[in-house]
Image (cartoon, rainbow, N blue to C red; front, side, top):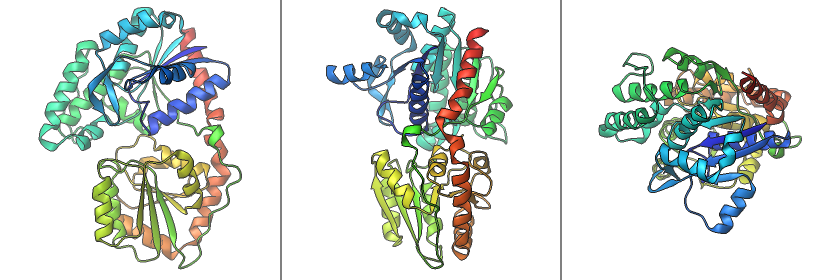
Length: 410
């Protein structure tokens, strides 16, 4: 099969979308399929572009001044469509367009798929309603949400209007972001999500197209060989690791406030950066917390740190649709700590510690209870190790191959 990936989030970024694209691309290519990736990116030298092209990765026309995180946003969808047809005429011969995210590059792929009569699969990765709320200053959230909807509706119809409610769209900005997400999904031929709980939310707000669940997988080439069972002896240091963004939506600050009242010996190693990075460092120093910040490092360094940890931490709430760090912990046999009941879907029962709710007080209580019962670390680690082969992308990719094959045959 010939599969074209499109994503507004890939080059120069880390995170779940990038990880899932890399793992799926590698697995599909290993199974003999042709995969090409079109994404946004900053200008690069001819040598760098040649190297990317050798890996079947191509940068679409991107803005120089406007950016999202560490990567620029794309030019207008119409410009991208024309660029694709002119510079990559082979795009007409692909079997499927496999699309990630909901911005310019993704919009162009959905539109071009209809024009060329090529089936489109839209992967809905994230909660853009929560992301917009956490990233945009309070006074600008509604304005930005309206502008994003306005831009999106230029290119993709918005027949579904999500109204404010007491569920997930509890303000105008969130309602507008759900409107964008739902209409974007409905423009595709098929929708994929990484979890059942996010599938239910999309259906609730009006996605009419078929939605299939395809969970992210862990790359075979990074899978650690024979990781040991984790054990924690009474009164020994509980070694925790954080390797998500250090940002508002990931809730680093509430977790640090929880650590203030933990009664026992612990250490937290933080890998990654984000909007709350320096604020978190100042807080940890001011309150004399045993927290070490390492910043952005290579994944190989993070892997070595995970293997030394007793507990992997992900304390986002009502945000993550999957939580890639959880399966990264599972691959290494490390128990996980979270607050969001939705995350129970990602890892095996009995392999995690979950606080009663998302508050710092509840997290403190859960950690104090674990320190009183350190033997639970070994029990949870054994469950992780027993089930970890299930998360390999080489196993999960068979499901994606069937999904793609089925939509091509329609």
